[in-house]
Image 1 (cartoon, rainbow, N blue to C red):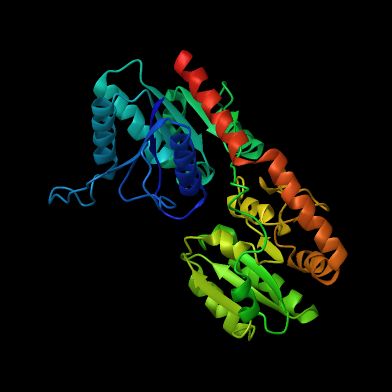
Image 2: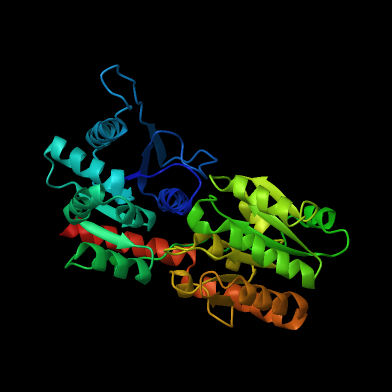
Length: 373
């Protein structure tokens, strides 16, 4: 197949999934074209079947803001025409599904198919700005196929947009050969000279990630067991995190690592992963932690329960219940046998349900189904 993929190229679940999917499809012999304003995350090597096309956005005096949407649509049409693509896969409804629709109309190509994968924040965006509702609904319904990364998100989409043809659920995936225990052991020894436990959080530090809760949980855990907190990522609430660290006098026990390319090496040294989010359609970072054998504590009203088995691979609890989250974390960190059991079950669960090869095959099957319509 000849496939075009457009996504937000920055660190985040949607960009990571889109890029990893493109790489996996290229490895299987498909011709894959990534289209965005910069090289997407995790493209770190040359591949014969993987191409990148940069969207150039020029500033015009007439426009207050650069017209990225139009530039992307024009670029997609150009790539489709030049490389004779069969299918465009948009990650996020706005603006990517809209741009794919415009490109298809520009080419007047009825054979070209468009698939949209919804990741969550493209839907919650509608809740905060209703002016996007109609264009989001139109972009979803104009796609030839729609997928969601969890059943939780599919229910949200159907409820919010009253869509009759339910989207297909295809979960996020992880490379089990890449994400596995026992990574940066030298760094772990340096970081924990007194065998402290390592608690981790990875995100883009947006308000919905509730970084304040992460620090509240860790403060309680640290009072019960010597531990360190690794914070990976950057975003608008990074300042909030630094203020809370100062307030709780945790400077010596919290390490800010910023964005990291090879996060698998760091996740593999963790003992516990925290993701107490307000909204989480799936939780790719949590999946990657589980693959590394790290139990996860997350929130119950999100998509996290679809990957974290409560009481088996971690715990899912009500949002804001930081005290119970800390209690459950301490139970795991102070009971070596229980931690080993959770760690083993975490990796087994991911291998069974979210392995890269299995999920990429689901996408291939769905692509073929859409192309045959």
